[in-house]
Amino acid sequence: MNRQPLNPLYTFRFELSFTEAPLNKQASKVLNPPLAGAFSECTGLEATMEPKVIKAGGHNYGAIQRAGPVTFATVVLKRGISRDAKLLLWFEKVANGNYGHRCTVRIHLKGPPEQPGAEPPIVLTWRLERALPIKFKAADFNARATDVGIEELHLAHEGLFIEPGRPAGG
Image (cartoon, rainbow, N blue to C red):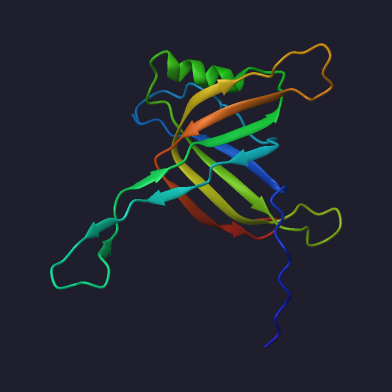
């Protein structure tokens, strides 16, 4: 059997894509995707299941565990400050009453390039269903600082899934 060695996956090789997914399927398209791409950090890809504990009579060696409800952590996206206002516009639309305007967010983890100069293949994709912006934070201004401005967008969502990657060029 010819097995190739597993290359490590580096978490700094990722990109994001946003697809509109309004709750009302007849809703008009309001944004041309609200944002995409160049984030420097993505945290909060987390799902937690609260187990249901059942204490049964005569079952003295520990309680019986059953699956319970699942909750999802808030996903926090950070990136260098942008020249457009698409992040804030999406947040404003939802904050001003367009509660149904959601997006499907895909976080693509890329592997090492198969050839020098080639586009790295997508190894796996995390998918957030019906994401909703719940916090927008603009960069802090400080005349004495030399840091790059960072924007943050916090997303609540209704599902965390993994999709298989695509081969290079696919």
